[in-house]
Image: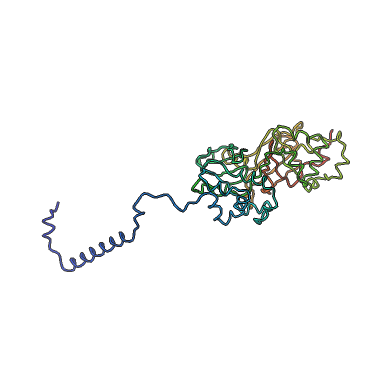
Length: 372
C-alpha cells in the first residue's frame, strides 16, 4: 500500500494540478447546489398529506362526481361525510348517472327525497374498506351500508395460473378506480349506479315497469306470477315487450293462447332461474378465478336446458350476458334460440327476493312450447 507520505511526495505536472483544482471546485459547487436546492422535508419521514380532504369536500371538488355531490347535498349527507368517519364511498361517475337518465343536478328535484336518501346511503359504508381488506376471489360478500341493507361485493384477485386480475364489482357494478384515500376513509369510483330495491319483490319491480307488461301478463296467465312475491330467490331475465314480439308474443296474441295446450314453464318460465341470485358480474368473476363462468341448468319441470354466461362483451367490453336454450343438455341437442344483452344500465336490479335483468330478445316461440 502506498503511504500518505509517499502520496504527498509524488510530483505532479502543472497541467495535472490545474485539472485537479478544477475538478475539486466543480465537486464543491455541485455539492453546494445540492444542499441549497433541497428542502428539509425531502430528508425527513413523509408527513401526512394536509391536502387530503374528507369525503364530501373531495367529491365536491371533482368534476366527474358533480351529480353524486348534488345527490349528497339534496339528501343532507354532506355534513355527515365531512365528519370523523370512517367511511367507504362508492361514487358513480356523472356518465353513470347519465345512463340512468339523470343529466342535471336539478333532476334530483323531481325525485322523492326519502327514496333518494336510501339509494345514496346504500352507496356508503360506515367503515373504511380498502381493496386489500376485501376477500380475494370472494363472490357476493355482504357489507352493511349506511342505510342498513347489505350490498354485495365480488373481487377477482387471482386467476388459476396465479396471475393478478384485481377486478372488483359492487352489486354487479364495476369499480373503475380503487382506493382513493380520503381524510376520513376511502372512495371507489363506479361505472354505474347501484339499483337497490330492497323493499320490493321481483314481482313488484316488474309490475311497476310498463315495458315488461306482456311478460307480466304471460306470467299471470300461466300461473307463474304469484310465486314471485314469495321468499324464494329468483334471477329473472325479463324480456321487454319488443323482445316478446320478436318471438310472436304480443298483448293481443296472448289472449288467444289456451293455457292447457302450452308448457308455461317453457314459454314464460324459461326466463326464470330459481333459487339463484346472480349478478351479471358473477359470471365474469367466476370466469376469471375458475376459467369457467357459465352456469347451466334444466328449466323447471322441463327437459330443455339453459346456458347462462356473462362477461365483458366485444366491442365496448362492457358487462353483458348471453342465454342459449337447447332441447337437451348435450351439444348435439337442438338450439331453440339464443340472446345476448349488453345494456348494462338496465341489468342488476336488486330486489328483496332476487335480481331482475333486462333481456333484448325472446327465447321461445309459442309453437316451441306446445304440449305433445
